[in-house]
Length: 389
Image 1 (cartoon, one colour):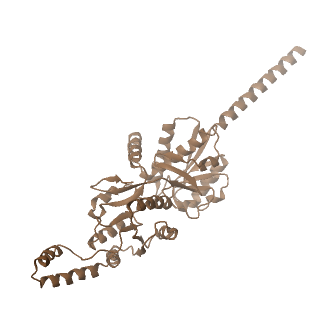
Image 2 (cartoon, rainbow, N blue to C red):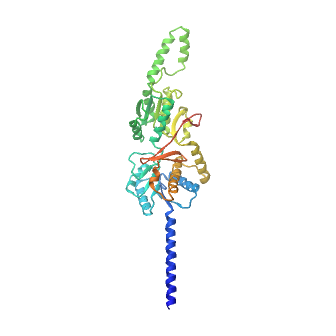
Image 3 (tube, helix red, strand yellow):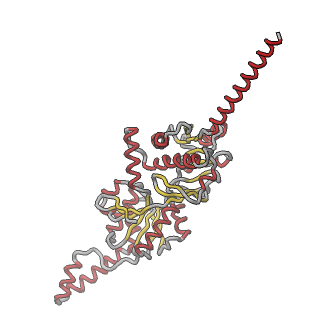
């Protein structure tokens, strides 16, 4: 009987020790698992954008090829309430780092989630909660590289133009920081019919046209050879005299941007004599279709790497990606890098390394809840994007 009891006790102890060791090993394994929440609009109006971003994250996972990285996608539905509800679920799962949301308006209540850091893909940086990093291509990064380029090409009379629209706040921020030292600033009505009139006033088109007409009348009365030669030249012109600025920075996109630039052309302001700049256009090839877009400059990410990313994405998913989704690819790479180089432990402080990081979209570092990127300057020339700085 004693022998039987001894055997039972030994068996129980053996099972307990093995079970304890197994649990310890499981805990150790779980400790080395990197859990990443993904908060994107996977239904509704912005579903296609969200799905493209999710595929970019999946592509990054495929390239990293580490089974200890687990992603947990949830639907933000493109609104603040759904984003908050999903974030609470991430918190229950013990997730400390989340990629997303994409849109600024989805961030409204995420500041209440103290245990999670969100890498949002927004490019808006005003009033960002302390637990959110704005990872988009923000206006500060764009202005910084433009300032360096302005110094390089020595422009010193730059007009700032912005529409009375959703970009008004960003435009005022650019003006107030005064980094580019604007010569004059103007806002314009977003109605296409009113844009041309506004640009005519800015460029003093009617005065220059009248100056030409007056000069032609004077020359027509002269029989001097040099006056006849001058007359021949003036008859080919639309206005007389130079504008009082050497560059224009337009904070706008799409059809409105095209309307503004076309209006400058109609107002006889040559893009060969005046430098035109705009904000990051994500290499919109529809800009190739307008003559007024020639020599238009803008800051942006690394085009060579963007093309590589697009090619890789298309090969993997048999569709073209949303261009901005390269940032989601880099966001996952950033989290992985910090985790891998910290003994497989994620700590949010790693994201703020002074050394900075290098992703597919270029070099960047994170400071004051935003990613500051080292961008490049491109210009449009003969239906190509040419890097000039």
